Amino acid sequence: MQRRRFLKTALALGAAPALIRNAAARKRPNILYAMSDDQSYPHASAYGARFVNTPAFDRAASEGCLFTNAFAAAPQCSPNRAAILTGRHIWQLREAGTHSSYFPKDITVFPDLLERTGYHIGYTAKGWGPGNWQDAGRDRNPAGPAYNARKMKEAPEGVNKNDYAGNFEDFLKQRPKDAPFYFWYGGTEPHRGYSKGIGLASGKKLEDVDVPPFLPDTEEVRSDLLDYAFEIEWFDMHLARMMETLEKRGELDDTLIVVTSDNGMPFPGAKATLYEYGVHMPLAIRWANGARAGAEIGDLVSFIDFAPVFLEAAGVDIPGSITGRSFLSTLQGGSQSPRECVFAGRERHSHSRFDNLGYPARCVRAATRLYIRNLKPDRWLAGDPPRYHDIDDGPTKAFMIDRRNDDAVRALFAHGYGEHPAEELYDVAADPGCLNNLAGDPAHEAERKRLFETLWAEMERTGDPRAVGDEVFDSYPRFGKMRPELGGFAEQGKYNPKYQR
Image (tube, rainbow, N blue to C red; front, side, top):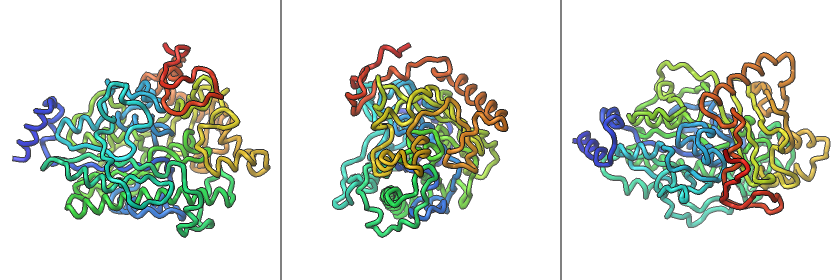
């Protein structure tokens, strides 16, 4: 009866028989995709981070799988979220491949495919964004229908007042009987701004902080990192409530739960860069009735792989437009050849350069090496001085700008803010802070050449405009705050004709 009801519903929605063939054959899991906003690997207590406590993430990891080599497709919110939703590299997504632009209507997103086969879908807080999906001709956010009505009666300063877990409950109440669900929990923590000092006020200790090697180790920076940790824990608290809700309903083990972040921490040398702390992400996946438990997985995983995982788990045919590859077999303990490398890229982030220009760069990450190709090395990594708007404002940024000429800060400032060569190569096993560039070292020339050729071949294979010198990304409009002092073609929401094809 349940199978017949599903088939009737799917056909009424206009789903093609090929799309629903596998989905009707077996019970399909619920899917909860939980994504924090600006959290780097390894900042979860399951990884041994001493200054952050994430019991919900840790539970998903211990009762499921903990991944140590998961990578975002971009180090910024909206392009990486677009890559997740489509299973494609950012350079395959036109306007959606840059920050805060349009999301073209003709680009398929996997929540729509799930919905067409009977899934109840929705999201809370931050779905795809920032950007303008309305004027692109869409009738809703690409992540699905929004559930944002409930607000917290009491919440600390700096965190979102959205009752994420309460809105998840509202979503479940509206689910049709017997329908599986897909829900996108897009918390806005630990995105800045923070309530300065909230980490210390909550009882956290400066001496517990592991300061990343690309940041100055000072009390000001340590306190800022504690504030960041406090917000990670706020996100995790709501995830714990969601898991408890599912447990009370008897649906926890039937739910494929993915817990991760969208891009790296909002500190210099991390977010909006292709360095390790910009694209290396935390990831835990729990599915008691469909995947193994207690495994630590070191295979390379790209965020463009999530879409095919969800579709395969749901029994939905994976469209040929998807570039990512499912790793569901790895989750289930089967044999699957691991990726040899993953790719990421970035274009414009904030409005931080003359003429609204971005910082185009691409990278390939192998097991222990990271190769970055900066396509416009004459531009400043973090945006034009003196404000460096590609870095979110905060105490650490201000400290480094004020002390940039100090002996202890000068090299770190140049790394996080300044101009960089066209090629960078890092041994990330020995140098996770990406401070020692091996490109140009004769001892590593063979590696540099091999990784460059691997990256460029993928760009050409997948139609990256940058591979043929096409600067169309610089023409795409940006929505959001514009800064008059940068001049040039900076009118909000307008294509720049200078760079169109």
